[in-house]
Image (cartoon, rainbow, N blue to C red):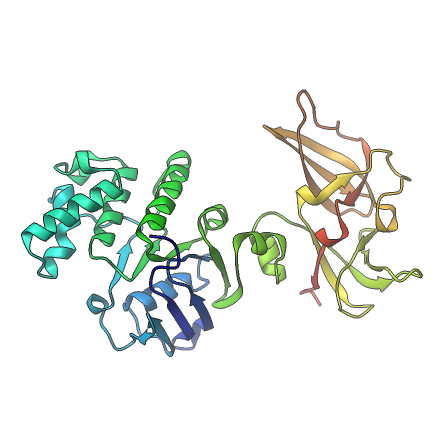
Length: 368
């Protein structure tokens, strides 16, 4: 089943208050059928609260949860056709894999013959049919996760909820399971909402990412847009790595908009903010290039940024440098490492520039 064949999910102006504390502030998400959406943000940003609202574990203070065109706020969790995979998987230790997968079906009164057929189908989907008779304690973390996923999908949920599903796995297994769950979700065509604080997890798995901060929705867009075209300073600094340099907007005699940096030097500025505005200019490490002629070379608007290499690290296929600019600010660079290439020695004078003017993101400076 292809993405788009599943059930649409709408969070319509969800607000959640706990006394005077505002956990979620008027969040609206329109999730397409069959789509995998990641709720991404730091601890306390409201992502788990939104998941609980969809599941029916709490009733929002304001707003509606709409599944398949029908508001479900009045329905208890067991009537919402929602499947959940918890962070700790919550498998029954005294039940076999097959019995765990069949549990939700049995609770719904499904006949034994249909249970057996559905369990076989789900275990084949997660590639665990050969382990049907084992108990959870006899399985690895990744296998337990797939059993939990099979159990959630067995009841044919309209919406699948994944609550930090990879948190208990080591890094290598986590990547394998991200790929596996993406495959299974695509095959099942189930609309899926995953809660995570891991930006790589969100960017690699999701069709779209909802970035949350302090209960507010900062951006809802495909992963490439979130990374390449962040809409707020928070998104730019939370997703990926960003150098943040402070300055004021100005227009050069030729008409070019620039940021005159407090640390010295100029950066191009594609913004409609007025001249004189104090701004934070963000530049990702991989969007910083070395002007190989060194200080004094022409390298983009204003000739570039002058500084000194403080440290260089060869990180596999990447060279990372930290540069101290002449004005005192520090800036990180990342570039592909050619065979045999070594970092520039500490103390080397360099000139830096953006790889392209549009790679500089400009936002109002929150310090002012």
